[in-house]
Image (cartoon, rainbow, N blue to C red; front, side, top):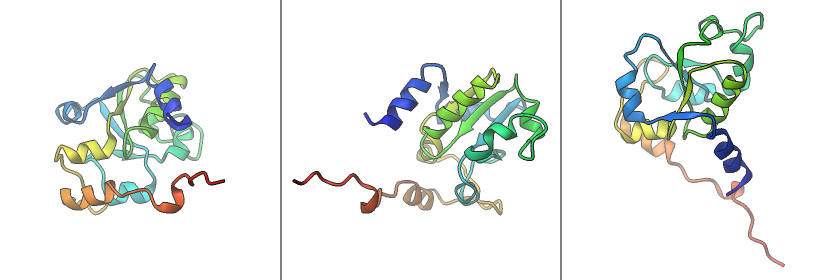
Length: 156
């Protein structure tokens, strides 16, 4: 297990996850905030309907008042049910842990992320509100890691 996975596993000691099919049932709850923390281009390409976008890099400032990044809906939602969303469910676990440390009481992470959502054939939209073709989303979400990002082989 690499250091990133160890960090996620440690966060899962306090962060609960919700499965995509359970979220599909819960998302009609008006007290639920779907918080997508992916990068802007990822969100614009495809996202769960009615989710709000706050990139992971601005999350802490968005969660509180009096910052340029403040998101009023989020800053006043310390007791609301919040589901954090990322591509595969790792970044969202870490973000949920951060929000817990900031005093948010009801944060959970979408297990398997957008990939799991798409694998269950649930609807996603692009930035213009068009429904995303499941097969197109699947192809993009399941790209292989490029060669230059793979650990080099140890050769003496």
